[in-house]
Length: 301
Image 1 (tube, rainbow, N blue to C red):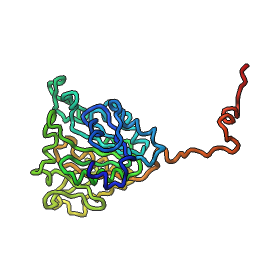
Image 2 (image 1 turned 120 degrees about the vertical axis):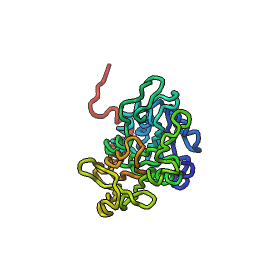
Image 3 (image 1 turned 90 degrees about the vertical axis):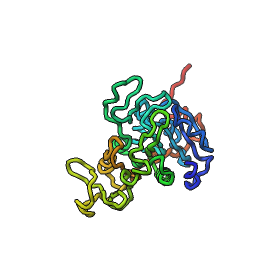
Image 4 (image 1 turned 90 degrees about the horizontal axis):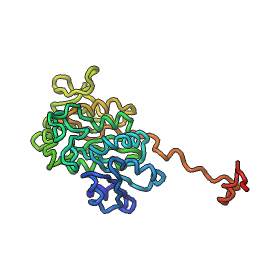
């Protein structure tokens, strides 16, 4: 983010980083901008009050624990209303601050001191949640590719409305190697699927793998040689309906199979607060006293 901000064309005096409780809450300290500390899970709710200030660049940072658990309700409605905000979810699939509790995104089988047999419920998929409430900008990046992160952050900031970015991030204390199966240098070419606007979705060192839409199973990975390049899904982040992006978001539920990276959806819709401008003052009401005594009033003796 420090490298990306100068390219966004914003002044640090017009930039606000909103944090909350948790490991990710230290983020505002690393930025030479204005910063706000909210309470756990409530960071997305702190932006709508400033929706009438379109000149502010507001970034909300949070973890998979607070944004998808105690703060899930605030996140959903910030995205649904299309508040002009950029939300960065640092997903390490664990509660780090409270010493290793499983979080809403923890993989099946994850155990802790409270759940010795291991977590049995399926993990929550952040991008599917965002697309399910019709978020207008949804993207994913990871902490092993700084250049990719910078580009995704800049795209998210340029979007008018609610932008949601999931950052796959390691926790080397309580969940080390959280995404090693897909982001390590040895496996990255085979496991990361780049989403490039207007191009067929294919991956692998020689582009031998691709993605197609199956009527029964949704988005599936195939060998290009078996289906032909014409059968591949052409990525279109500007589709008005989120169903295709939703299918892509569910390609790798446990993040141990080929996983899409990049911008899943980017569409233009009315921004919260922008479509209801403050009406002009009615003529003849120049003083606050005239306004207070207009219409239905009572005289109390």
